[in-house]
Amino acid sequence: MKKTISVAPMMDCTDRHERYFLSLISKHVQLYSEMIVSNAIIKGDRDKLLSFKKVSNPTILQLGGSNPKELAEACKIAEPYGYDEINLNLGCPSKKVQKNKFGACLMKEPELVAECVGSMINATKLPISIKTRIGYDDVEDFDFLKNFISTLKKEGVKKFIIHARRAILQKLSPKQNLSIPPLKYDFVYNLKKEFKNDEIIINGGITETNQIKDHLTKVDGVMIGRAIYHSPYFLADIEKDIFNNDDVPTRSEVMEQLIPYIQSETKKGVQLNHIMRHTVGLFHGQTGSRQWKQYLSKNMCIRDADIQKVDHIMDQIKNKNLSSSLGA
Image 1 (tube, helix red, strand yellow):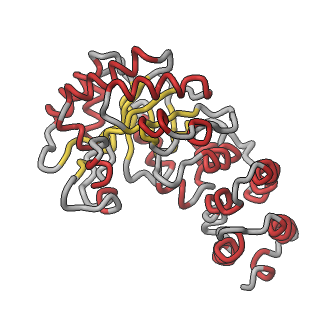
Image 2: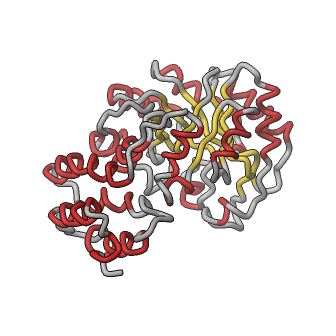
């Protein structure tokens, strides 16, 4: 089975602009959309929610919902837009998501989840995957996780992304749920031993290529979230160390390649800040990084940002004058 690296679905982060930006750095990673609620697709602006610029990277749509008919309808609507897979969110612990009965709280109702994924599979030719946790609240038992996965496998799901923490549904915020519950990677490793013919992807707390290499000896893939969003050029290390690809653009070249996309999108009415906010971490760890972030925050990550300032900052990058030109 081919080993994969993917960028996790993250609310308010992995929109179509972020995915295009990341595709300029890495041609191999899989890119997941932020979660889109099934009913929003049915009743909302479908093109605005689902359209994106096609790239070579596999692109996966993540849905949120718990109504089998609505999820099936959303899959039918989404299929022509060019996604390679549809994923069901069974891992988000936020109270807002719980209130609408989707995300991690659905781990309490495996039969309902089975009905949901069964309806999705019957509605589309695209593969259906799920992203979930190892447990919830006080439920942290491998047999529970194994039975939960087995129930979905019977419906035809073959790809399972596991965040190696349980979800605390009442006492913790979504942010706290990303760090406070301890990571239990062994749960995911053991899951792969139980389901040898299925694709098991591990997620949670992965920040270095050495960690990725180690995980890939035990599971089929690695999913990374915050480490990439906060430092997008981490993908360059992944390209070189994991995919053995040294043909990676520099940070400056990434920005140069992003300019035509910015020009095209802003002509369509997209606000510049909706794109540029994703580039804040591009120079993370480099000389001038602080000035880059400050400049973007003051000039390009604000409403009605001026696109001409993109040309200005590119001139400074090309002249290797980032720190002085941005007020260091």
